[in-house]
Length: 76
Image (cartoon, rainbow, N blue to C red; front, side):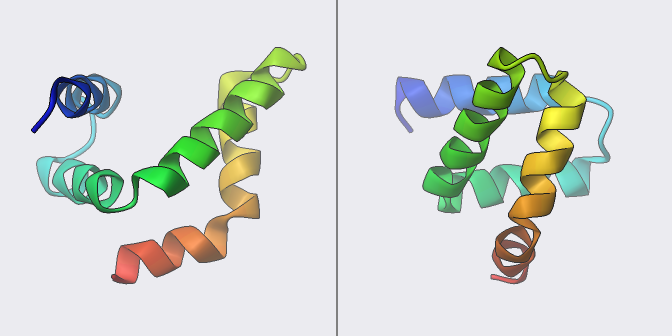
């Protein structure tokens, strides 16, 4: 595990601190297996935030747009 992976895990742990451990582990495994998908989602959320949208709203819209892909990753 590289330094970048370590910091990504720490950020995820912080962001998901109120999520049950089993779900948190599932999300962390998904991010490890499919980092390109989550980077793309993060980039789209940031772009929407810069245009004035709130973080929660931006995240929800982006995730709705990529819902089918996300569900597919959850089944893998």
